[in-house]
Amino acid sequence: SQTIHQWPATLVQPVGSPLSLECTVEGTSNPNLYWYRQAAGRGLQLLFYSVGIGQISSEVPQNLSASRPQDRQFILSSKKLLLSDSGFYLCAWSDPGGADTQYFGPGTRLTVL
Amino acid sequence: DAKTTQPNSMESNEEEPVHLPCNHSTISGTDYIHWYRQLPSQGPEYVIHGLTSNVNNRMASLAIAEDRKSSTLILHRATLRDAAVYYCTPGHNAGNMLTFGGGTRLMVKP
Image (cartoon, rainbow over all chains, first blue to last red; front, side):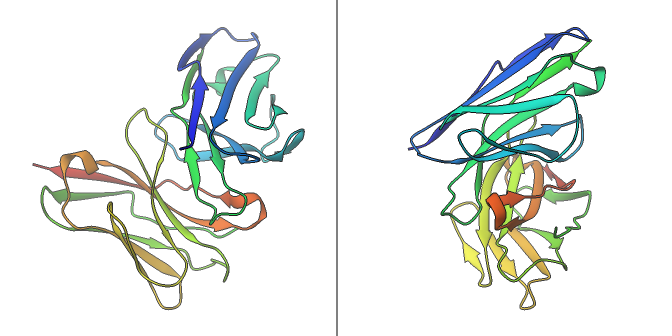
């Protein structure tokens, strides 16, 4: 069966510091991968999605970036965090041949102080 | 992108059925309709999806209007564990894109 992992689970970072969040998927090949952000009490905002290694599409211009160095690894990064980057970051995967169903990881709660 | 409209919140009594509505009037003919739910501090959980016909699974039923401009998620017997935010989202074929709106916060009273 497929599983999706995210780490760390929680993170507190000062403004201006770098960020690296990691997401890995097991039990599937060539998944579509997604990064979402959820502000407190709000819906999900799609940040990036990837249909293959090295292929990243950005949905929202900001100081975040994403990379996919391996088939089942998706990384969210920032060189300098802003206060507004605080939120709940969720990684998800889907089967390209499926019915668009996405499966979400447990999330990383980021607080920027 | 298809837009969705859901009530901000709904209440239900435990053991009673719950009907959660969603309007998606701009959905395209090939988009699936997905429902997810999110418990506090957790990632969204897939509930059910459908294209045209009504669908049933162990978690819920999905009733899709004939014109596909609306759908209703049906929880047959609400439990306290069903208290969550429920998102209705049409799928987009390009990269399996889903758009999540504000969802409906379901509160279940004992």
